[in-house]
Image 1: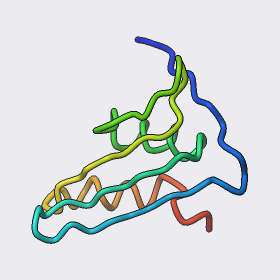
Image 2: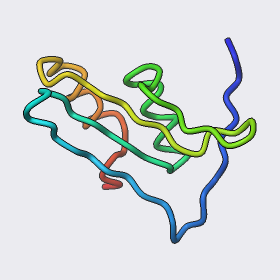
Image 3: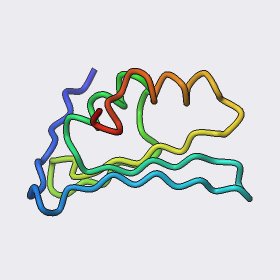
Image 4: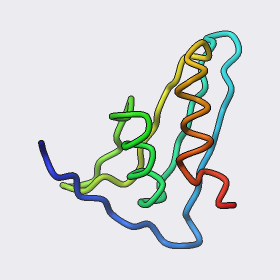
Length: 84
């Protein structure tokens, strides 16, 4: 297993976006927050896309089909996506 190297973004540039793509029936999650990326990798598996600069991962995106309700509920429960 490859050890992933993440690059921390500036605090003012940290973002997490959750998009519901109704036509494609997909829940799309994008984040550049390192801790959340690690949590989502554990919960959801490898991301659909990893945005890489040099040798470091700067952001990741997961596309989850809406019919995978167990995966979505695990993400909400286990990953601290809302920082509650």
